[in-house]
Amino acid sequence: MSTFVLIHGSWHDGSAWIAVINHLEAKGHQAFAPTIAGHGKGVDKNVNHHRCTQSIVDYIVSKDLTDIVLLGHSFGGTIIAKVAEAIGDRIRRLIFFDAFVLNDGESIRDNFPPHLQALLDELIRESNDRTVMLPFEIWQEAFINDADLDLAKSSYAQLSPEPYQPWIDKLDLKRFYSLSIPKSYLYCTEDNVLPQGEWGWHPHMSSRLGQFRFVQMPGSHEVMFSNPVGLAEKIIVAGRD
Image (cartoon, rainbow, N blue to C red; front, side, top):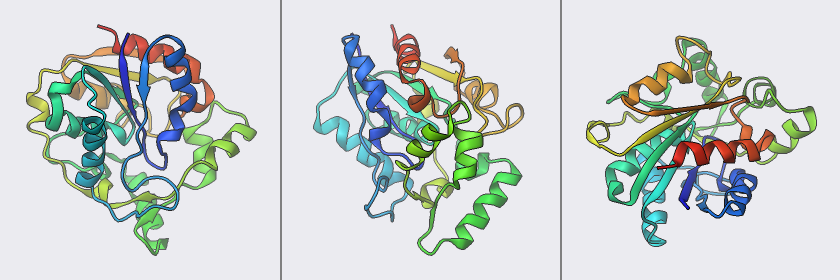
């Protein structure tokens, strides 16, 4: 049995994983879903990428978790890469789930296509606290395009504004790319958050990992809501020895 630590993406907090964790635990695994610093409702959003990463390092160390399978979804991919640099001896495998895999020296924003960079710039200009809130229309059409309207609305209600600074911080990833920790890339075939093809998750992002296990499933970027059981089963496959 495995110990999974599931790291959420932008706009989310750890509660996004509840249904997935229930299935993982029903299969006999342990699973944890911490909330990244600066994420969730009613918290201080003034964080940078280092603070986000450190909050997950602190969580894992405080619980003395070892031999873990560490999964990062979307933005969470950049977190698990930096966590692996800090406490790689506690990690058995990394799973990047429709996740950003940055080149050394890049930011998340650098990996958005021009039209999404322009949208982001507009949203930031309209913000008075350097956070970004995802418009519902984009959530429904691009993020959770495999859900009906009721699920799109109920899942959207769980989101909260995203701190902007972690998206623009340039990350030194030289140490990450020197690590020998096994890696998997889990890809949802209907994920349209990044345009499929030149800017997409796979193979554009995934190929940067070098050698990796590839696992795919049908679904949108938000299958933790639309198909949590199916996602949990694929996480088990992606995380096995």
